[in-house]
Image (cartoon, rainbow, N blue to C red; front, side, top):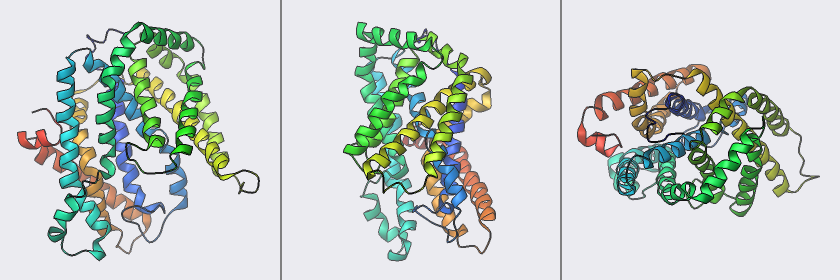
Length: 369
């Protein structure tokens, strides 16, 4: 694939916006699924939780794949110095600003009963430098820096050998799907070594899993053969996704197996079925996106720009608005609709009328000035 002449990949433009909106909807639903989130409704829905746990498996991995693709395309057009400067300006600065300005309201609302006024508590909250949902940006910043030496490696004779091997693998209908074996090994091994659910970059059970998709993006975009194979094999990958989904829910709803299997074994099986869903869903969605998302309309280009600050602000808006919505005496369905509409409207207003027009705010939140 001629990377230097690549301007837009329409399928990735569409997927980037759709996936961020899916993350937004996920966070809107979090107060109602029974998990221990920042704010929780008194009444929860088990069915909602059962559905959400499935979609958790592939939303963010796909976004990391898209980022890996973007890293290679950008490095083919600019120097390493310009690439590094771009990532400092568009990732590190928004991460720093977000931890100082966007995250503290969430922490305050979460602990509001034990705190005084927000402005009294703000200095202590800001100095914690918590990333919260902005861990995604922290990961991206580190991954993009690692992409610099990796890009050189993949351009070498060794990298060419890897690409050629992947191309041969892609000639088989389930060839690329077989890479899930490597993903499972990485996920299970590091999850056993780092048994934590936190999203700190040093927690390799999380970061190594997402880095696998990032590297896949860096490799797959280098070969037109691989890219086309994903499109041509989309139906077979859909069947594999269907099979993986059955395995996923069969284990999810399985009876208590603690009498027969150790805790590590039970968790290992869970990570295995999660990887099967994540990888098959990724291949399926990318394949069908190539087939149907062939153009990038003007409104989508604008959305691709503003989806970044939308991501930065969305969870804080949801938590603050949701704190008041969950106090209503109303059915869960009405609360979800209200929180969805209000938080989408307010976050969009912040991005369009506050961030977009002003150069300093565009700079602080990662938009080109």
